[in-house]
Length: 175
Image (cartoon, rainbow, N blue to C red; front, side):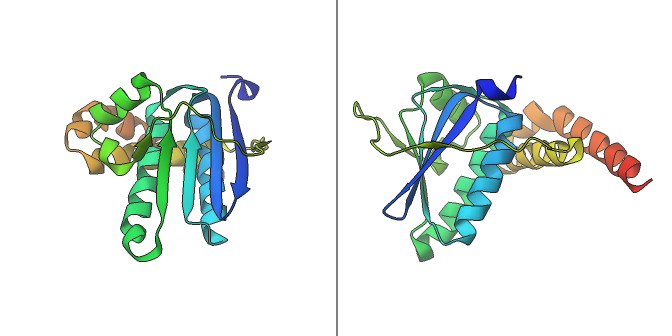
């Protein structure tokens, strides 16, 4: 995929992080989103709102990453007030979340109004290593398999391929 065809836009307003996803939420974009979540959580931000009206679709890696983040937020939520909200996801995205058994992890909001914040484009990491991307993809698929037993059958071959590829890539890096 051409990296410029998908974008993450970010705004922070009143201790809430707003993230707008334009285009396809895919494995390549998921690494930048993961880094963004990690960095902002370390800075103390607890509420994240994803505006999805311009998100055309999400692949399994992107969905696995979001599910893992939502699970962490849920676990911390009772103590810290963490949350991950999805605003205006397309029906096909909601359907995939349901089919993967992870819809319950998200607060879904349908609104005719768009979120009025000053979004700024997030620069995508240009030098993502194949090892880093593969590790992220494997982690996302393992998350999906751990969250719903039905996902094991769906993703076991993908996870095995990614695990084998990751081992090969790590061996090459050590040389």
